[in-house]
Image (cartoon, rainbow, N blue to C red; front, side, top):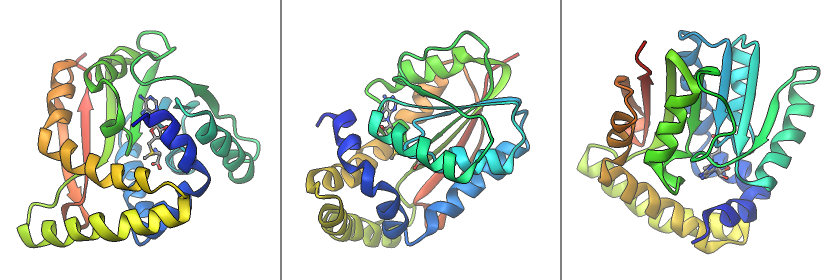
Length: 229
Ligand SMILES: C[S@@+](CC[C@H](N)C(=O)[O-])C[C@H]1O[C@@H](n2cnc3c(N)ncnc32)[C@H](O)[C@@H]1O
């Protein structure tokens, strides 16, 4: 599966499917991430794997950054993000950058805050991406990650597993035209959550995790790490 072209294919229907398949909960998850970010220094913010820019817009509306950069490796996603920002954030300057998380075109310590919503499980090299996030953060800066995970309760996990194995690929496939993408997405959530790769990669980058919590019966987790001073 070429993840970059997959996201390009599903980009036009990405927002609709996000809201539909999460039953509208995705807005609340991003609001939680913004609420968390608002308590952290956020003069210069990088929203990595920004997709169509929903978190970027929420950050622009909920925080007061002097610099806000939205980055993604998909040209199609960035084009939609650009249109959304022109519509929802008139007169606000948001830099859009096309780049891979594993090779960020920014200098050391340029950002106070890096956010990543529902991106990390797709990264080709999570360890490299986390090292890059750490490099572009200033000492004392924070990384805020929002990602799907598996609910702790066996009953909820079973129900969620059935939903993501049937409804997600069917509805996602019919509306986006890409059944393979919406089969990949729930599979990637399962394997990523079971692997424990996120805390390992964040730890290996040298940033201790300072906060971790789950929402909506444990289907989504928020992880905050801090680059040492
Ligand atoms: C599931 S979407 C999430 C988008 C957005 N953050 C949101 O909250 O809806 C994942 C995004 O990550 C991007 N992505 C995946 N791997 C990437 C990588 N290695 N470097 C940069 N962007 C990547 C995809 O192009 C896609 O736009």
